[in-house]
Length: 409
Ligand code: AMP
Ligand code: MG
Image (cartoon, rainbow, N blue to C red; front, side, top):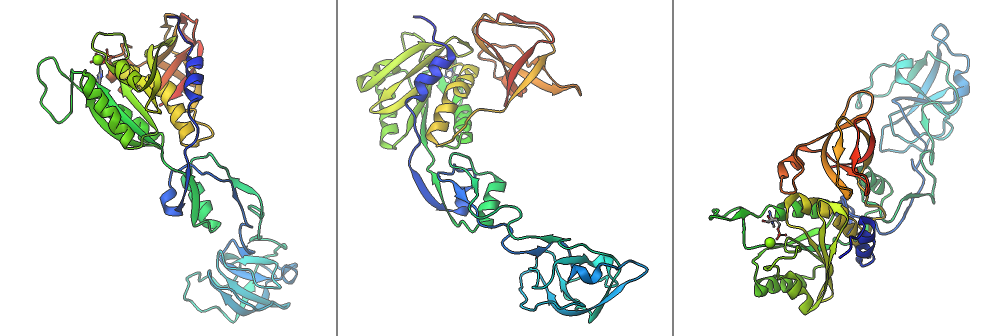
């Protein structure tokens, strides 16, 4: 069987995934959800308001003012934040105003309280009857004009983006109480292998813990999806079939499994999936994680990752994250990538390699060192790593000081 390039495998997988349906939720339920419709703004801020605590004035009244020649104004209104005044300032008049409060008619500037003889900024203190200003002021000073941040009709948030904290705040500012987002895709997850023991149970001779379930469940949740944990399938036809049928009855959008994709006598996954679907076994030109299975079971896409813990992790990063991102409606799913310099030489066998590395900043840029030995079962080196260094296909070695791309984990 010939080797499939990473990119060709990604394209084959991605072509089977498109966004799930949308749902409309109250804003508070939308944290980290994927927006399904563009959001148009109204004017922000919604009205002219003061950016300081002080006195709203007519700037012309203070055109000649200086500390040596103060100007006295009559205070005719008091406008705390949250209230509006319908007075209109005449020449020689001022209104006490708090940060964020609407500018009264007739005013075109705000003089800061520090530039007056009234130094008490506590709310609750009555406004003075007169105030002395010590400074010249220009029209527009200390005013946030309606629409100065964004004007009505501007597209401010885009379908296909995950809602971050600041996005949530903008939606609230705009009064968007109900938001249309993509529903969370459901990802059924199973581990397979007779050697696997759940973390709660004692280890019998020859057995190991099922760690992939925990690694992959975290990655699925991090990709914005709901995990449907199926547990461990023993290397038995009926066991595997039972769990796959559970995935179907739970309405999974995709089934992800680990192990049982290398050609081995006890790997029944192929037989079961093909009984009611199809399954292709690929050898991908990458390391770790060369064997990969892709197909569908009873109409639901099935991705079979390799069993070795690091291979399963890298396989998820390279193939599953993108597929889940498409299901979730995300416009872009790529991890943050950085250019790094190698602090030590690295060897590869010519396959596209994802090496566990530690990225550090030495003050002149980012450099990387290997995080430990790169065996595909060595989860500790992945724990110690903070990035994957990508050695492109066809490259057999990179010298000290060479530049490469790293994916920050
Ligand atoms: P396999 O693909 O079934 O040949 O498994 C490859 C290697 O990965 C074997 O050493 C398995 O014991 C190990 N392995 C498989 N599944 C898991 C799992 N869920 N957690 C930890 N190691 C696993
Ligand atoms: Mg196995």
